[in-house]
Image (cartoon, rainbow, N blue to C red; front, side, top):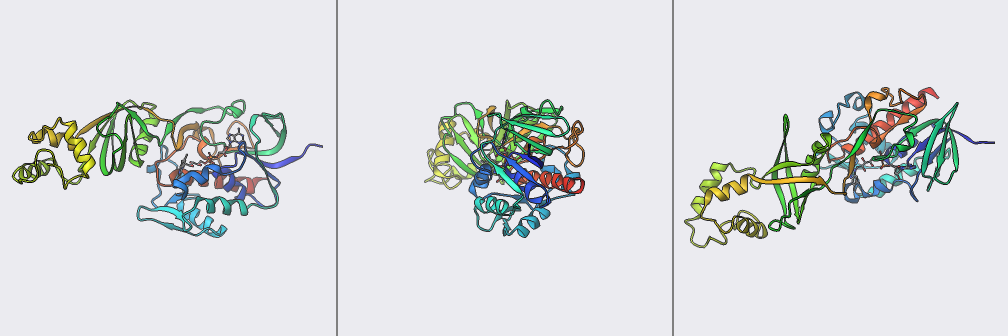
Length: 378
Ligand SMILES: Cc1cc2nc3c(=O)[nH]c(=O)nc-3n(C[C@H](O)[C@H](O)[C@H](O)COP(=O)(O)OP(=O)(O)OC[C@H]3O[C@@H](n4cnc5c(N)ncnc54)[C@H](O)[C@@H]3O)c2cc1C
């Protein structure tokens, strides 16, 4: 006799696990995970610390207006939810929330431990095909079959081929929160600058980010660059010009005066005219880059305040994918408008945010909304 689960969750990542923990304890639930263990990606988040949400929460940090969903489950709900499960958290001065253990393992452990005995976890179940007659039938790549009354699809970014026969309106995935390929940059190669301003001019929008940047031989990286990449992903065009300002708190005029005055200081010779302003590696690189022409103050100011860098393409280290199931094709409960009983949560939906806990917040928000709807309707 075939075993029919009340709910099958496809994908044991952040959204799949929170959904399983929020579903009623009376349901028979299966989590089908293609990897050898659940929640692997959670362990990699926040450099192993898991930045699980942000206290500064609003739609402006996302590619979509998701107020309707955040009104149902926002960052405060997330903190309360995890606190109730047993996870203590703290927020840093930018609102980023971490477990007090500073270990992503705690987040995964708490989610795992919170699951009821009615939740069965099956790893190495790579779902390849899903069909529906009266109930859903899910087939793995090894032809094992699972049956379910309802499905929550939480396979993350760059997935969805398993679902194409059941749902339309799938927006192609694009890499977001990613390092960007640039021209070969032998001058600034391997230099890390902690506070820089970057301006990206898109068609009708100017995006300004400030923070740390890492120059590699032909790429740029860092949270600020990741955030800019998210705007490029939205228009699927990574060929852009970014203007860097190495001294964002000093105006051009002020810098001109400072550099002119320094010409009168004897020990600040041609080679070390920037000493005391930047760290030594950056001083040397800037001076090299302007061909030692340090007497030319205009040239120096232009370099420091308006360094142009052209980006070409994303690398492969993206933290999320932009794109996925269009919100327009989902009810407010995140159930498919095409197929009753088919729900989506997490990154597979076309919602993505910038760095800072926003993407996990979407995973928790969407998963909670789905669980709540199933609890009320099954
Ligand atoms: C290095 C890194 C660091 C990050 N740090 C942060 C951070 O600090 N804060 C933050 O907010 N966000 C962060 N993110 C983003 C965050 O991890 C994702 O937004 C979040 O994990 C999405 O959750 P999800 O459940 O939708 O997908 P996932 O967590 O990706 O889970 C999807 C699961 O589905 C499984 N799966 C896929 N296909 C199938 C299939 N066919 N059959 C069965 N199972 C399948 C996958 O193996 C996976 O376990 C980071 C991402 C990366 C890569």
